Image (cartoon, rainbow, N blue to C red; front, side, top):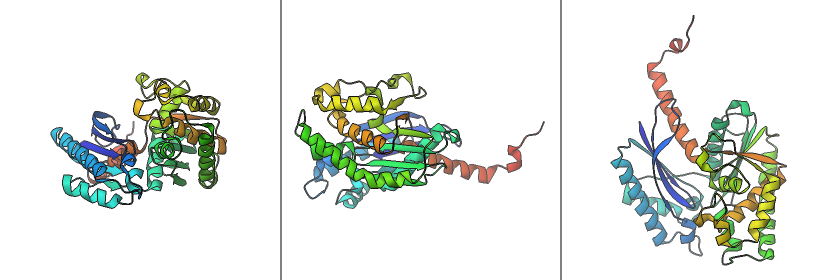
Length: 326
């Protein structure tokens, strides 16, 4: 089955195409994406402007046509914090659907945290024990912990890297110390209730970080580049993150863009993401974490593939056929 997956995030709109079958690994063979910060197109009332809505709709049409051209049989399309937190998010989704025919499913923050956790669990396996996952997006920060395929606790807070940059650091090439002090205070205060909920889930055996912000931070802190492939173990230590966060606070945006693993369009906000990661690790007494190549997108793909597997085995496989004897 050829599956297309459309991810409308806070920083990027991304289409992936995959050939999947029951039990297969979710590896994409084609990709089509655009850097689109929808929150940059919000007015003072939190509404996505007509320009932002039309840019999103135009890309969704492109993505639909790209999927059709490549003979995709199914389209899984979803939207996260940039849409769910806009005051006219439902109207934007209706416009996209009426113009393109594509229905974008809006995920809640807790759903986003839970689905991401399920992907991390699958990547590291049952042997990882109790897993704690961190995921920093452009608009929100998700945490989840548990021992099973689904988390015991999943939570989301409005501490995305892009959101914090716009609220505290926008307009500065090098923000003054007072702005960083205010940002740190806000992050710590906002995180405490969520951290208490996560801590009640127990002591983790493995802590993971997912998505672009954590991959960039790990690379800055010395982890292997993406070119070495997904199977290289990448670890980020709190001690290194503290050092590099302070260094980035003193850098210009252009200097951050020259750091390994940092793209030009994320250079301004990466330091805000670093402060969130550092604060969460500090509050939960996490000295190091591992980077998971799989996150929300892979979690949704895996769920769709699991459904294919259930449908195929329930209709064609006799359980006795799964047992062999010598």
